[in-house]
Image 1 (cartoon, rainbow, N blue to C red):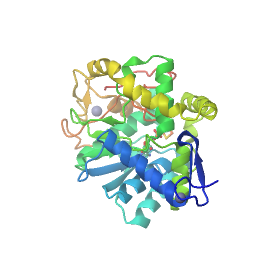
Image 2 (tube, rainbow, N blue to C red):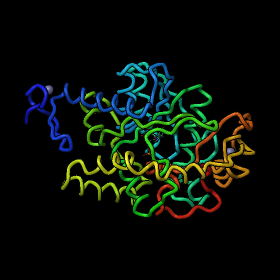
Image 3 (cartoon, rainbow, N blue to C red):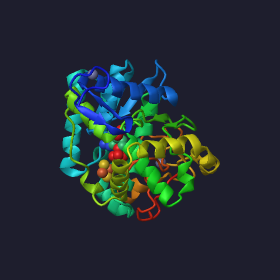
Image 4 (cartoon, helix red, strand yellow):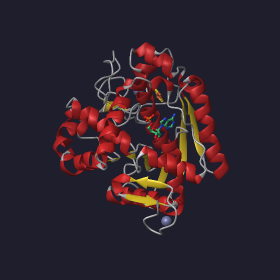
Length: 341
Ligand code: AMP
Ligand code: FES
Ligand code: ZN
Ligand code: ZN
């Protein structure tokens, strides 16, 4: 197996590009794909202050490393979710990555600050854990980005994530979610801009990138995600991809090119009538936002000083297993904890 660029020994084959790469040219390929995604969707300006949400897993550490390597000023944000050992260990990976590279990592601990953890919150709200988790993370991502004066919030969603969420939403014709399943959500109504620079890379590639770059990441998946429909969709798409390389890419990018705009009016209508949450000030269509209702049901509390109009939150369905609360139609319906955007 030879590198398509230099004919040296290749370390990876990427079938959808019909190409093999050596170490150096694989790294260059990853940088090129990220640069292309950023340019194609106007994700990040050179002087933007960037906040990368890092979980300690391969995707978010890879995207942080790539953005820093490309010259962006990027800090990290880690949320401690209180999912037992899994959270303890994931925090160590995020912290070690930042410390070793002299990068700034902002940390928010859900149990410490809000008085509940994901297992408790999910039981109390009678929501699937990934749904309570996604709701909490989105709220805390938005708050941290706005309070820290960041221009843009980055997540590590990759092509596999995006294709799988699209697959789920299409399978069930969740048209209200399809109009906003985009690699960029512009800043609006107090929400920060949110971007996914890894949409042109698969998780196999982000894992290989970490190995090549010597990035230690948490390999285990979240224990609460077992049995999640999202994983079934991923497996189905992997089977299709094996038989038809490039299928995932053309499914997702074909949707962006040719279908997403048709669903935009419905997504837009959904966002009308946003007011401020009575408790925390986040944009919501209800009197109290979904996050504050979750906190209350879980027996926690929103800390003082989070005055209305101080911050904002995106509670709408997005595009990954746990950051996609409400986007996965197979999740049990929530009781009293809806999504606001
Ligand atoms: P998930 O929703 O778990 O698939 O994660 C999607 C993205 O959300 C990751 O690539 C990260 O960018 C971000 N993320 C997930 N978990 C955390 C966390 N505990 N703290 C900060 N960011 C996270
Ligand atoms: Fe949120 Fe698993 S990381 S439920
Ligand atoms: Zn090469
Ligand atoms: Zn609120």
